[in-house]
Image (cartoon, rainbow, N blue to C red; front, side):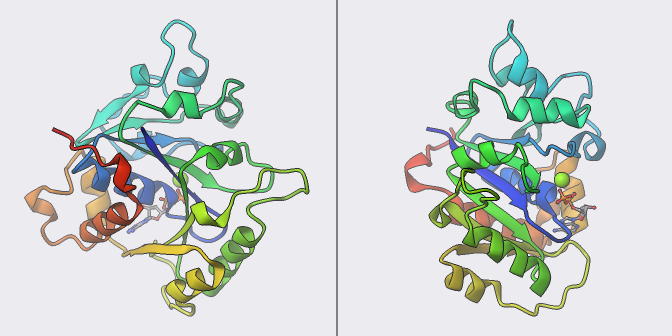
Length: 252
Ligand SMILES: Nc1ncnc2c1ncn2[C@@H]1O[C@H](COP(=O)(O)OP(=O)(O)O)[C@@H](O)[C@H]1O
Ligand SMILES: [Mg+2]
């Protein structure tokens, strides 16, 4: 059974794509793992990772391809992990996210873990449908009062913007804090906020662009060049926490 972990932000300087890539890399040390770009505002990884092929297709093609159905033909490899990019016009990404046949069937069985980058959860985002079928939804926020308050408010209403909309139970939501280089004053303790909201604070990712760049170049988090990385152990700890015991199938 594939574990689907969706990452998204509500407010603040995000760090969603970086955290999704890093979490997939941490899971990739022990399992088969894939990062799926599904941010309606467009993907980032083609711009960040020099070995990814912009002509290989991605999210949109996987959603609508008839001759080669499924996600597998669009998975590119990046070090330990697989990557499915989102490219092209935002309307194409939105259309793919509204795939009529649903998303869960496309993700099940493809790898042990799929980490989905849903970007910013703006009102009415098509990404909510994918968030609703994920096993876990990790909301990424800087450890600052404003973004944490907005994230708390979102969790409180289960992401609902209208009475009839999709509602996500707090039991599936986790809070992941990340330092993306902005104001790093920690005015709210995310651990305590998580307890207050009844969601788990799954960890904190320190600011470490060098590690992210190595991952983009295909380096494993287990590589010796990562020995001094601050981010690698933090990512492994998050991976450990969000990994459901029943899905831990030994890789080899
Ligand atoms: N842990 C981190 N350490 C260093 N830089 C980071 C970290 N997380 C994000 N960044 C940087 O912050 C910027 C925004 O991050 P990104 O992951 O693209 O956010 P989002 O996907 O939410 O827009 C990027 O330039 C990225 O390199
Ligand atoms: Mg992004």
